[in-house]
Every structure is written in C-alpha cells, then in structure tokens.
Amino acid sequence: MLDTFENTETARLKLGEFDSLGDTSALYENVEIKVFGGIPNEEVLVGIHRYNKRRKEITFGVVLDVIVRSEHRIEPPCPYFGPCSGCQWQHIDYSYQLIIKANEVKNQFQAYAELSELNVQPTLPSPDIFNYRNHARFTVRKEGELGFVNRITRRFVAIDSCKLMTAGINKLLTLLQGKVGETSQLSVRHGINTNEWLIQPIIKNPQVEMMTGQTHYRELLHNRYFRVASPSFFQVNTLQAETLGKIVKQNCNLSGSSNVVDAYAGVGTFSAVVSKEASKVIAIEESGAAIKDAKINLAGLNNIEYIESKTEDAILNLPFKPDAVILDPPRYGCHIEVLKSILIKLPKRIVYVSCDPTTLARDLSYLVKGGYSVIDVQPIDMFPQTHHVECVVTLNSNL
Image (cartoon, rainbow, N blue to C red; front, side, top):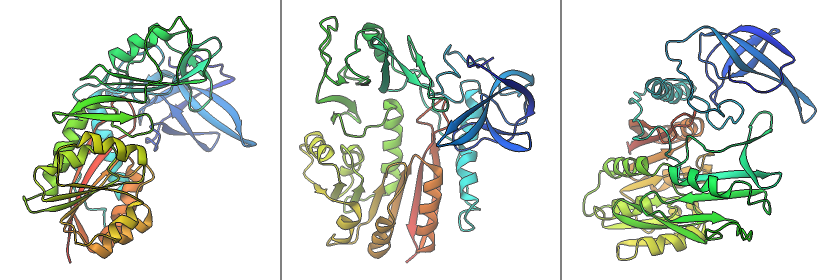
C-alpha cells in the first residue's frame, strides 16, 4: 500500500510502539525491526527489506497492507508518502499525532526519576497541517531533476510538489524542475508574509528566469521584519513561530526591570519579543552571520546587547545575575559547560525551547539536580505529519 520498492519477502506482523524516528517496532525472525507506515497495535502485511550499512546488514519493513486497522489511520494525501520518507505520519489522523507527540515527551522524561512525575500539557496544534514549511532542501539528480532521498534506502525520489512546502515553494519547484543540473543540491527559503526568496546556489542556466544566489531574504514576524542569511537558523513554520514567541515571552515572567539572556539567539526573534518588557537583553550567538542579521533586525531596540561568543563563556562573564535565560539550542541540546555556567549564575527563571525530547530530558535532569524546579512543559507542533516535536519548558530556581 505504501511501498514502491522491490520486496524479496513479506510477513504478517503485529506492530509495537513508535521509535524516535516515528517508525513502529515489530518482531521478525525473533529480531526487533523498524516498520515504516504503521500505527501501534495494528496487524499488517510488511514488505521486508535488507541492506548493508558499514558492512552490517540492516533489516526494515514497510507496510504493504493493513489487516487489523487502527481507528486513527487515514489515507495519506501525498502520492510520494513512503518512498520519500520526509513525512512519517501522513497516515495518522492529526488529532492523534498531537497525542503521540505529548506522549513522546513524557516517555523521554521517564528515564529520569526527577522528571518522571512531570505534567506535560497537550500539544498545541499548528494552524496549518500542510503547506507550512518555508524552507526546502532539494537533491538534484540526472538532468536537473529535483526531489528527495529516502532516509533508509538512500534512493532518490523525483517530486512534482511537496505537501509540506508552501504553495510558493511548490510553484517554484515546477518552474525549476529539470533546469538546475549544474548543482547537486538546491536550498529554497520563502517568506510567506513578504514573498521574498533565498535560492542557493546561483543557477546560471538561461532557462531559469527568477533571481537566484541571494545572500538573504526577509520575513515579517511579530510585526517586525527579520533578515535571514543563508547560514542562519529560522523556524520553518512561520505561523507557529508566532505562537512560540508569545509563549516564550509569557513564560519569562518579565517586569520592566528584568535582565534577560537570550542564549543561542540566532537572528534575534526571541530578543525582539521580550525586549519591550525587559530592562536589558543580552543576545548571545556564536554565528557571526546570525549576529549580523540580528543587529539589522533589531535596529531601534536600544536595550539589546549582542555578544558573539560561545554561550558558556558569555554567561560566565556576565557582570550580573540574569532574571531569566532563554535557551534554544540545536537538536543536540546544551553543551554541559552551558548548563554548568547557568548553575553558577543561577538565573531566577529558565525558558528552554527544544526540538528534541531526548536531549531536553537529559538537560532538564541536570538543571533539576542543580536546584531548579520544572513548572510547565508545553509541547508545540511545529512540524505536522512528522515525528518531530518542539517543546517549551519553564523552570524556576529553588536557591
């Protein structure tokens, strides 16, 4: 049903729980394998695939047909669902996707006694569950053919449109298809509120009529224009990024006299949101490109100071104790030295924004053992149809 790959064997299997990549588990020949396209407790016909990775044989399954069907199963609307693998959960009703994501956060907390009893709020849904992504990274094959590479088989899948991308990106995809053979990768960013573009790299084919090779584009967020350069991070779900910013500001619990540290500040989105209710904001960012963007984006906000530095060094060198620290690290979480520096400075409040429940739980455990209490855990769905979940956790100092 979901598979266009060649099968050498099939099996009827009972599916177990989801793993960290959104696949279900199953026992096959007394070995646990991962199965794409399933839902826990279903009985399914699975196509079995084997491939070698670093001289190790890997076995995985793809659902071909459903024998005992979950009440949460729906028909995936995308013709590429399965072979593409960019979406893991198009076959699951969206309301249940939200439940799964909150449960994943809870499950990761169970590994730590000090987190196991935490209350996790219901996942906040995305305003758009399709066509929300403002950033696409296409692989280019053959004579300029655009598509994606399956994460398991590494097979290339050419596409005409993507259900996750904005309508603008899909229109651009149609215009560029078959015309970008001079490169192997194409990155496209689209400002949904500005209709500005960042298309990398430069495409010299005279058949390509739109401008390419831009150094940056702009997006309107929180009533402010944000310039985003090619190497800079920006949330891929623009509408949900508005919600995220409001939650972070609210949970910082600021007064007009508060001093705030925005660690991993990026292009300054959180700094802009909290600046109106703070006395001083310290925006810390290791990327020079992001700092350059932030200074342009936050021009006119005179209570923001920028520090281009490693986060742990900047926090330790602060001449004051912050009232609040915003942490928004990459997927691998905070470096241990960042957490140590926070426990030295002991800000009253920490608002931790995470896109990975596993590293989030690890870091929260360290902070709780160091004298903090978790007072709120709010999952937010930034990535519908995928297993990814964003989470905002708020902590207070007990010291």
